[in-house]
Length: 245
Length: 263
Image (cartoon, rainbow over all chains, first blue to last red; front, side):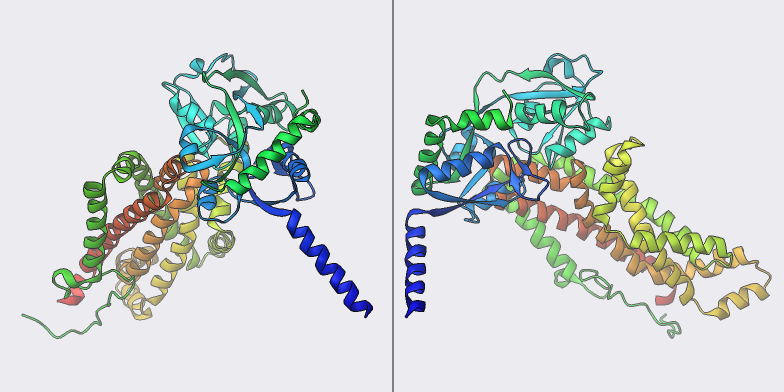
């Protein structure tokens, strides 16, 4: 008898759990510190991961994170491999055609990282030089758009930074929190690299959570969570914890 | 006039698409693959247009880089392979030891790891340009494989050949150069051709070094436009066409080298 009661209680608990806690699987290319990266305990961590966990608590969904390589992360979303992408995806018009975006959760600018000895002040100073960026990021688009600059695309921004450190390229363009992480905080690169310029693109750039086009249910949940995180001041704490401003 | 065949002809079974001389017309695997792949590519570009046309304009410099890496690597790998093969059959135990150690070490490390190693790990000490790093890694890796093929080819030549050459007054080096190696070349060409084709396909790995080869150009295009199907269809077709051309070249070489046994 007791066994049946326990079983029934367990079933009810499970049922109610799934009733109010929908699981949303987020794909994340965890090579983008401090936004999302793999910590020393081999778990994904970072600003965006914490943000989504908090959003999940507020809006009532269970976030689950799946490590996916950046190159192909959008194809996986279209192929229903996961529900959403939480990977510092900047909201652009081209991307909006292919997927839907949540409300923005972080404002980002593109930063130019160069060796300390360089005296470049703007992107225009890099004429005739080679700039690296992670493949098909907004940083890569900025490099491609810059005149007279040779672009080189890497699978991960870390590899581009390492190549810059080794002297093969003259600069790297990436999101400013990532640039700050590598140039100012990373023990290996600190004092060797610096942020030369913040690139003005004329438009504000924001990170958003991408979901499959037309997936209104998931989008509503995520939007609700992000809004709550902003309103309750959790966002400020997270920024203080991860970005330090 | 046809004379009686005394030496067995080496049949070119190696490789799925290498036709024999007797294959006439369209019905050889090679022709079929070429016509289908070129036809599909032309259809996509000329009839479907749109994304395919943009792709074909986007990737040519990538094709060029793939070609460059392949050709430089093949030349360097052949040279390394010949040295290694000779070293492996050398009587000098030091040379033999060096050649064997090279094969053992290189054969035991995946090409992808070697690429990372030469580019990023050694990048701290020597600043090798990206294409050169790719070529070195490919050549070092394939040099070891080719070395084993060269060794097998040299050992496959009957001992009587050496004995005959030596008793005619050739020294060891002359025997190797004028008697053994020319015959070995004919034997090893099919497997070497196979290695060339594998090398060409493995150059797609160098896209990991931020070398703007065919695959990387395709990936850039795909992750920017989200046209994955279109992009990888074209990339696959272009690789296939290049490989088919290379395999034809190899089979032509085989025909020429086995000319005198076929008469």
